[in-house]
Amino acid sequence: MSNKKELSYLESVHRDGRIWGIILCCAILIFPIIVCLIFGVFPKWQPLAQGLLATLPMYWAVGFIEIFTYVPMLGAGGTYLSFVTGNISNLKLPCAVDAMERAGVKASSEEGEIISTISIAVSSIVTTIIIIIGVIFLIPLSPILDSEILKPAFENILPALFGGLAVVFISKNVKLSIAPIVLMLSLFIGIDALTKNEVGIMVPVGVVFTLVVARIMYKKGWLDK
Image (tube, rainbow, N blue to C red):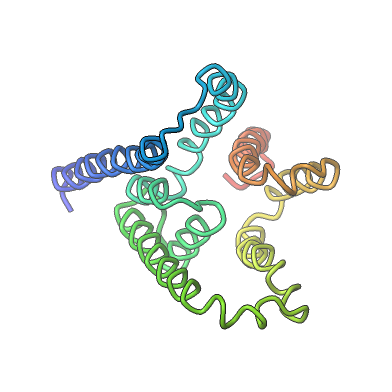
């Protein structure tokens, strides 16, 4: 594909991504505004501002870091779509990475851009269908889903998913994987609060730490050049 066509594709991705991002932002804000208007109840602005000042800096920082973390891994189209549909680290990222791994392409390539976007789109559609089915059959299946036999399985879905992906990537470069594994194990074992509330924040932290370590190891000649 020529550079002109590739540029045109990327321009359309950024255009559509911005449009849907703005639409999503408006949709998120419209719901509480409508609820306040219907019931005639509005928050007190001083406590609201104090609460936002205490929480917004963290979310702004995480959001800023996630842009630099996810774009190289998902591509432009995949990143926009992931930010609109959500649940990136638990679902969209593993799905896109596995799809590109199976296709033998990178997110920075045109093929990787397309495969990442398609895999995330399919993941979003499948997730929506499963949620619809779950809502319909939630009550009839409640005795089965709440059974003690299935409880351990539901508690280990994410560890099993990321464990399977980890084996693939760790096997590619064992030396590079040692530092981030030691860091994350130390943090999650030593800080109990991380396992409950801050898992998503640690994804970009782990990526930045791994990049720094990889750079140092590369400069020292500990990695294959």
